[in-house]
Image 1 (cartoon, rainbow, N blue to C red):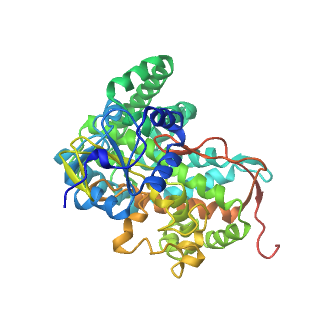
Image 2 (cartoon, rainbow, N blue to C red):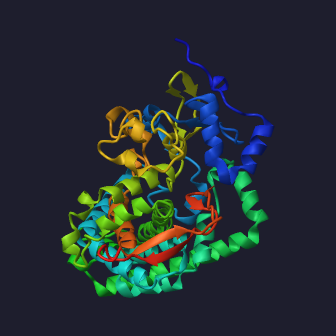
Length: 469
């Protein structure tokens, strides 16, 4: 069988199509989904520079991320390497593997020792500030509590409190919104022109990054002087001491990875939690179910070790939030040599997009994919109840649902997210009822991550005990 060439791959590719993609760059997930629906599981994406291909079928996603990942390298990393050149998200090869192993071991220790205590403490602090009848921005609430938890896990208490108090929330959001998948797919020379064209804004972003880096440098010095270990050790202390994680991490790697985790914890966790809160706030019955589960939480962290195993609706709501609003909504790789994908031969340096947004919203895998249906994640869920035509856990189609990526670049913070987000969601609805403000209709904005395009306003009311209801 003769392989088809790149030029045979269907999809839009004219200058008009490129202009349309530029205009829709912050709605790019919708544009990619239309391309997949109209042109199939392997389709061209109209972005200038090296050829871009969208891959949507779970089998092909698994091939790229896992089974044949050695034939694909990182793409669009130039901007990331300017910001965090020694972070795990910007390095490859043996260097990446060694530092990833060290970070994984560190986060496992944090997960078993501190995540329950820290999350319950910070959740209680955040929830105690709310008042009956308040109108709150669920996204802002999620950002603030996620940042407080992240800082407590990453840094010694004094340094973490200083970093949290010194964070300019708007500047951090600007830092996360500086680019998008369209921008990262453009040639480097064009990226430089765009950055120069908005020099004033980008100088502010650079100043924010320098300020955070100075804070991290001070935090590292603080951690070394405190020399904490054992159950009270934070990520920074474990990595600077090194005795429990296979050696101390060098400062340049340490700073970049701490900055990356701080940004990820601040942004990606907050996004997923905010969308879960938002969708649940329109479903009173779902709120009550989560509240019943959250009422079993204890202020004693040790009593909550097995809580999530019985929090069926809390977990289902988070799963559905990750499906419908994946914070990391697309990833990209580049072919390191000519590569056969299905019936097509992709030349070297082809950008290959895989999109969680596209695949998660495919009706082949999830019935009524545009509807928020936590019940699809119940063990007995059927297609008629909103489940997929195949369960996402089935080996053949496990990449119909991949909010945390896959393979050697699978998100190292997934286990911490699972614990943190479920505890926060259960704690929130065990104390409060939320109702969306009329005419408030946030939509996803497709930047580097999937953020709401406006405040998520909801009115909260104190939940009455069942005996008073």
